[in-house]
Image (tube, rainbow, N blue to C red; front, side):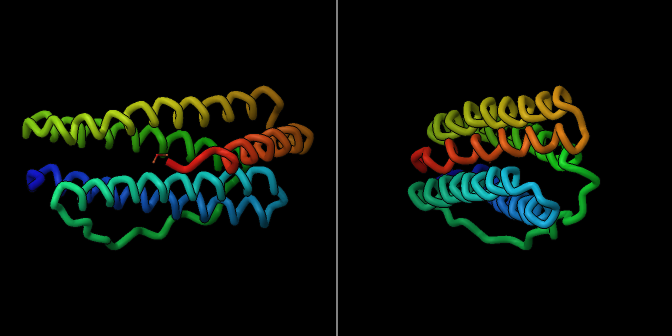
Amino acid sequence: MINKDVENAINEQIKKEEYSSRLYLQMATWCEVNGFSGAAKFLYAQTEEERMHMLKFVHYLSDRGGQSIMQQIDKPPFEFKSLTDVFEQVFAHEQFITASINEVYEVTLNKRDYTSGSFLQWFITEQIEEESTMSTILDKIHLVGNDKAGYFHIDKELESMAAVRTDAPIE
Ligand code: FEO
């Protein structure tokens, strides 16, 4: 049976992963409405990835005799100033998620739940990739310029990145 504090911490993380999925879904619709079809595809793929993260935690709790409790989810923002604004918020959100995963890891250490600590290693590594991907996109946006021509190029780039993500096997 999993430690109750660890179970609660993972349930909080499940809520955050579900929120991430909804946040990126909402951002994808903004991109679609504003003519950024490549960015929309990238964010739709990211929505699926966040749902996969959530399910990974859900299955883990079940495997350890715990229960996932679905919670009330905040409404994500639906208006953005620009594509740059969208990806600045994505990057900030991923940094928030990294900090949150680290907090869950700390609970597993305090409770000497080494099995859950080991399970969390996948997420710790995943967050390196998540932050790096979003930071690279932001760098590119700043490089090509926050104007129509720059956004056209970055949208094409995001479309290619979305294709790679969609092809990747879901773990
Ligand atoms: Fe589930 Fe993007 O972190």
